[in-house]
Length: 455
Image (cartoon, rainbow, N blue to C red; front, top):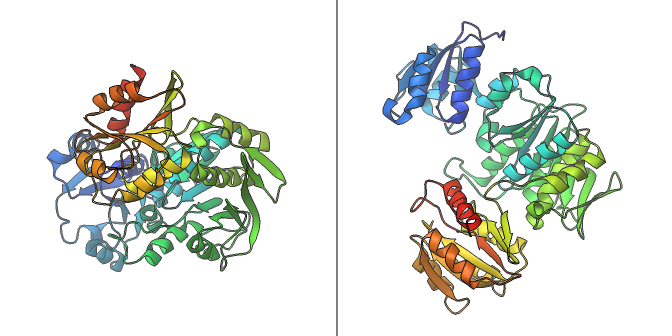
């Protein structure tokens, strides 16, 4: 793989998944790579050993003075704030500072990239868009902030016909020339305010997804989200919207077309096309929004109507996000372990129709549980608590629904099996972090699925 970086001194700052992928790509391009991470070698473990074997210079702990200024290029992992003083010093010394996405894209300039950002729903929309494109044929890379880093795709640029990429605000901060043929902002709610000085600054980082778009490209926005509509003014290409109500917030760009929810699906008004949503993996208003955004990206990106419908029908869903595990004696068991906060549980409760046995609890985050109690009033018929915050959750449901103190997941699953009747749904939607009893939310969800499948 030839590259203008061959023989150049390049430093990769941060050795999480994206940073390690960037190192791999730079080595393939013949760069002389230094890797920097605040963690010590013992914490880095196998990563440190592998990099050294590959001839990478490894620097751990605080950044040595002058190290970054001595490079030809610095590539930053998404978790490293670009406002760090040492990065500012490098920029002042004339050293370019790129994110891993920018580095990867420069090896992929001939492959159309479809980018998805927003506060919520990015992963589902990215995975779904990838499914729609796959149904249309061709070789599709799906990754970025979800799954494989884009640098992995850049190792074999001729292997791909399209790139479907989830992009976080942190990743978008580090782009300079990256161009999205299709770019969507799904929504915008306050987030990462530990890294951004304001909600406005967070939004501006998201709007960078429209940077470098040109004739032949397009943008997609949530037409009902006033903040997103204002960000759409940054796009210098046709802008399409999606809306649950058919309405759009004022103050945004003139829309070239609209996807509108309707009973059982949605309609693309500018194409006079109707699509049905019968897939369990796409239930709930939030998933209707995700599906409309994905369909707009796919149809405008050249995927046929038939392939889009086939993708909507066959999309398997992401693990741990309202994942239907099994139907047993008329009872559906749903794994929503990704719901690590109250707001995520509200989404689940709105997506399901009722007769719910809710398994909740874990390491609480200090937010009140009352909103989910109210949202589930009349829907949640039994509550089964686990983990550290069990008593707090039980207190919130006092007088609203019967609470069963189970302590652990295996007890909760067994008790739910005893209580549930045909037509009920057992929903694991914990509203808490998992670290009191599990390695992470995936481990918690996998444990739930294993126990349910053993019933």
